[in-house]
Image (cartoon, rainbow, N blue to C red; front, side, top):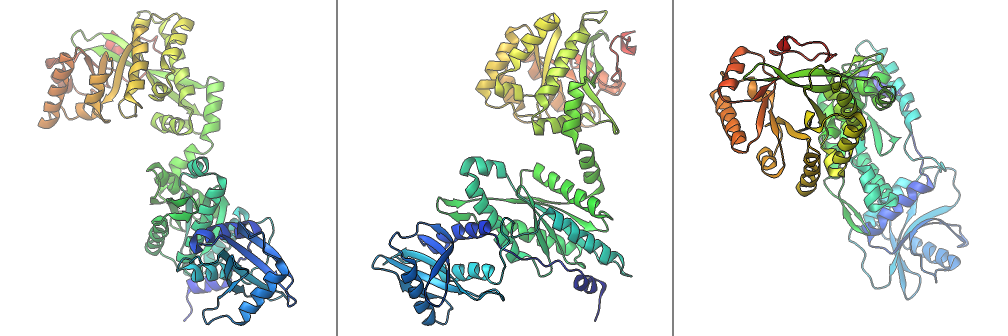
Length: 564
């Protein structure tokens, strides 16, 4: 019985074939540990015994003479056993296990895949099947020199358009999915083991992928350790999720190489046509956005596309170039959040909040572009800009209030924060006691001894230090014990439940008491009600900030309502 899915599948040609010499070399390298052989060689032998070595891996015996080798292999082939493989011996020192490679339809010569090993040595029990498996991959596939055995990005896009065109014409649209895969941490694998080993892992990953993909799937390589899978039309989202989980499981067994077993993992992002996107470019974008989100969790995970993920990814597309240009063109700007003394209700400082209006997109959420800057290594450029411009602006305030600037803890690991602060203070002429450097509790500080040394250098300059978002990260109490802090800024997650949740109240009381005993002041963030303000004041919280006291403003010269 006919169905839209089956009809679309029949009408969509997307077959591919081809094995390059490079991909064969990778397969042969994988065969060495899989068989226990010293060398693997693909031979082309004509009836007279004349032999040509088409491809090899490992150390071929120097005593191996091609004519004798060809005659020996042909003789062993004629006497091969029922398993389709055969054994023989080239000399007193060398034995071999071989199997014929079925010739391509236009070939008039015979090819044999042969594993060589020292006489008297035992091969691995799976050597027969491993050799035959690789011979089967080579069989009947014409050479495409200089080209990967998988379709490339251009071919993938062509097939994707075919899928959409064929299914779109059907009376009842057949769904299919696009799965975007990547080998996790490829750059680290390259650095640790080398490019050759990374290629071997990719080759084994491809082999395992082909083994789990159902009939009708289209697999392609889109470069950089990334792959695309198109499921056959008619594949539901539920079936796709099961397939994605099966794909992730192929990395449960490490790749066995000469140097030992090397673990690896795969991440996947996938989108469904037409639910997640109705054209090829959007379908690819949606799957890529889902993959990006899966990679954020450290790899080895899968995510399905959603409108929220796709929109966020679209915003970050080309973000690095635009952000670099914003720094170069001085297109960033600061907003100022007032910090108020609880007892006197007077402004004692302003926190500098970095903002960016991206051309064509409007103002970008700070958590989005700052997180992205941290991921791509641009955060130091943003921090430098913020610190320098905040200190410069503070010089023009009518009252010499404190200026608070957030910086990334990455400066601590690199031991460059004190040098940056010193340079900015010298350049701007701002009094050190007016500057407060704030580091988010949600970010790792790196080795505690290095962080302590660098923070001590900053304190020695006369600059104040604060931990921001206190209670929202980890090791908060340990950081209070180790680092020379002046202030902790309580996360708004605690403040919003004050007076409503008894446990939140008790935690707040305990933190304020602990800070007083350590001679550290407290600033509560996110204060929005008079009731919250009263509780904080009654329990000795020295400073507060939040929308009750004033929203962030663009120009710190303008008197704030709390200042009036």
